[in-house]
Length: 271
Image (cartoon, rainbow, N blue to C red; front, side, top):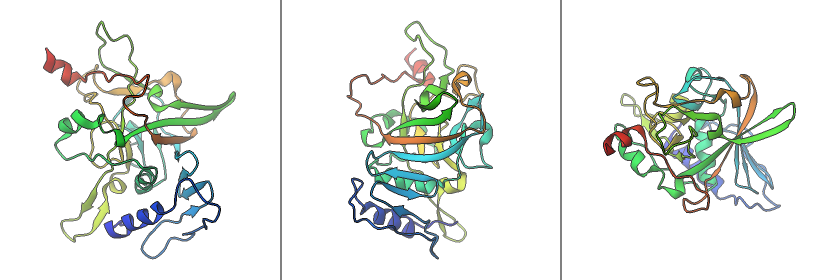
């Protein structure tokens, strides 16, 4: 589907008029996809429901339906559409990236866009963007019950640990970068770039993604101590249905906030 700036943002702004706290008299709306390609949606007292994406009007959490597609290996992305990057991402989802973007706006998260060729500058300020930080959790069912864990707990940094670093844990660093509107140079048509790339959540810098990891961990294919990989002992099995839960990240000044570790490139510069 070709997504134009006019209907996409007009549709989002119409949803923004629905208060997340909810009122009893909110009607159901948008049950059928219209001629402009606007997806169906439903507003209830407690939720805003989009195809594959649900926004809670009570908790301001976003739930995205997904499936585990990879149990081990290095990662460039985390969440993608089927038929795109399943060999280097953990989850696939049929939800359109534009809907995750819309949901982020609805819960009050502001995009901090990436720019082509300027990843290093983006990383310098990414985690300082309090209004753009996102918390991501994974929820699924096992034999002993329902589990909900931070996404980063399923990941492992490949960096070489120094004397001060006692863990290979990955820092919470997800940022709503918001993709961009791509214009076809031949016919002038505009489309949401993440819909074209199929990437919703990424680790390797890519301006098309909706949510980007905000720390530079290096290219995993350029060194064994670079990048991020799956912590396979904690992963649910391939094919497991999960819900990815997105919410606004606490303030950087909140108690218990983990200090960001320097990236491999920053360590090299300090020598």
